[in-house]
Image (tube, rainbow, N blue to C red; front, side, top):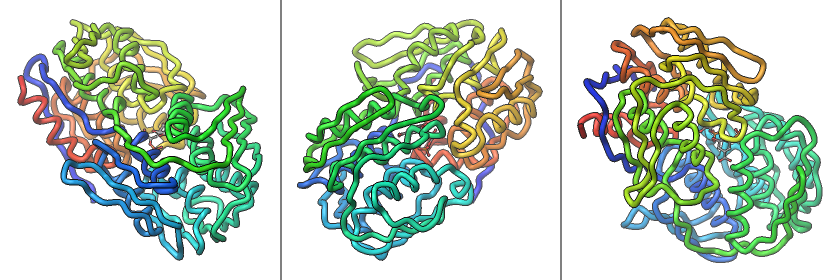
Amino acid sequence: MTQQWSAPTADGPVHATVPVPGSKSITNRALVLAAIAAGPSTLNAPLRSRDTLLMAAALRSLGVGVEDGPDGSWSVTPAPLRGPVDVDCGLAGTVMRFLPPAAALAAGDVRFDGDEHARVRPMGTILDGLRGLGVDVEGDALPFTLRGKGGVPGGEVTIDASASSQFVSGLLLSGARYEGGVTVRHVGPPVPSLPHIEMTVATLRAAGVTVTVGENVWRVEPGPIAGRVWDVEPDLSNATPFLAAAAVTGGSVTIPGWPAETTQPGGAARDLFTRLGCEVVTDERGLTVRGPERLTGIDVDLRDESELTPTVVALAALADGPSRIRGVAHIRGHETDRIAALVAEVNRLGGAAAETADGLTIDPRPLRGGQWQAYADHRMATAGAIIGLVVPGVTVDDIASTGKTIPDFPGMWSAMLGAR
Ligand SMILES: O=C(O)C1=C[C@@H](OP(=O)(O)O)[C@@H](O)[C@H](O)C1
Ligand SMILES: C=C(OP(=O)(O)O)C(=O)O
């Protein structure tokens, strides 16, 4: 169901403190590890949005206990996984790539499907990887079926993970439960979103798993995964549209609880907002961005933090100088072809954006109101909201798509604007 949304225009500089919900990436890693751990786990401050609710629902249907705590926590009680089960992945890369390697441990069939847009997201690499580890898989994209035998031999696989780091993360996350563990070797153009693989390695190590990392090769030793308490950090990528509100209006926005150290690629926001001309300060209140009089353009390689591309493009479209985003060819396989979508939507509002082989260019032009299409993509929708703050008359065709990773984006956005 889509929902037309008139993006509110800011009537002055936005000044607000905006607590953001938990990290999608950390929540879904912790859920998978907790489900196949040797003992119970608790997730404190997990994200509860479409992507993580789908993961929790899928694990429950496989036999795992995932219970709501009174404080918003999740208590996870592992159990032997069993089919037959139907899993709805929605549009979540973390469900369609992280769950099959775990579900391969199940006794019985597990059938995966998802949204229309999910059916065109790249899956063949990880499904071939699973075949190479001894898993019986029918299909090469959603929908597909795993014929689970209650265990996985494991071993070594060579894959081309240039289309998504999630292929590597997915295989590593469950590898400790495979008889021979898992070794994943990457051969091909550079793997994108490397901080997300570092997050996977750090998460596994925190659960007592032995992981060794070499040049384009990762090894997970077989052994038990410890149950534990996971404290989920705020989602720093989802913080960026709110920080952008300060950047485009010359205001100041603070995100409380910004971690001093993180493997989230959103940690790069500090550097990116500085390069766009903002002042960025971290103190006991959190991370604060103060917007300048005029934003400067940016020439940047976003391969490592590619999920920030829609926010950066929204900012670049409002900047004084030209911008170029490089290193993100693979985001054509994200929730939508984000390069094509961003170029089309910026240009629809009168901008001057153009596709390149691995990203896009944006030249400064005054923008006008009009419809911004989200293509069912949460980050396309939030990019439209950013532009709408300073360009009157922007409507976003599917604001509900933000529910993928933010439970109430429109409410948070109005609260931020009301906080002046
Ligand atoms: O592992 C993860 O949690 C993610 C990895 C990245 O995927 P890609 O490597 O496909 O970019 C990122 O863009 C996505 O939002 C989340
Ligand atoms: C690429 C993204 O999501 P997914 O986890 O579905 O790949 C994203 O959130 O920007």
